[in-house]
Length: 226
Image (cartoon, rainbow, N blue to C red; front, side, top):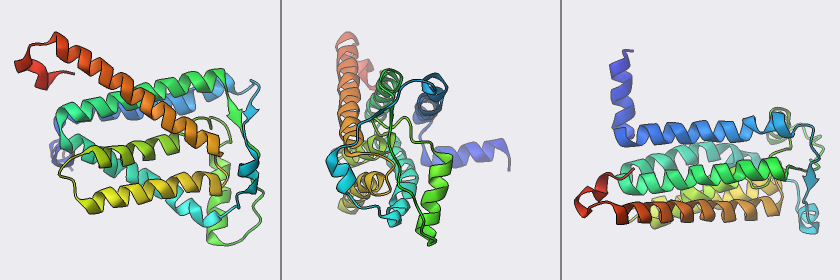
């Protein structure tokens, strides 16, 4: 397949103006999640599990929405990219700022948790065992999984002229993802709370930045602010 053909297929789904911001967002995600681990590997890690976390059951079937979250994020950000240039920039810049805040938290307050011992031989249990093997119980607070799904839900509710079915499906999927993180013992409740706070903080800072930029630029040029 020729390179030009690949480009046409990509731009058929993602507008050209959104490609670089999305790639930058993905790069920052990998740098924050994987790049901080070698630094904090030998540091003291804190377990912020609460009493309620210990009371919650281990439900391996929730590994399905946990994995499907990656598909949700792709759909969610493609929808944001296609919606509007200015809105796309605001959301992605806010997401990147959130990730940078998370990097600071990972470095200053590394967390861990005691994971469930999984003995089941069913498919869902085996999937959880595999997940445990490839994903160490570190870099937990705030939960990046919850942060991304929260942003997908928030943007689905914000965007106008979006089908009700899409909004409801995004909300339902996000709720299932939130539940999955605690039911398969990948995170604790405070990890979800932290994710929401950081997501809102990043978005607020993004809105403040773009509001400031708009006040500095003549009206006729505002549509092209980056």
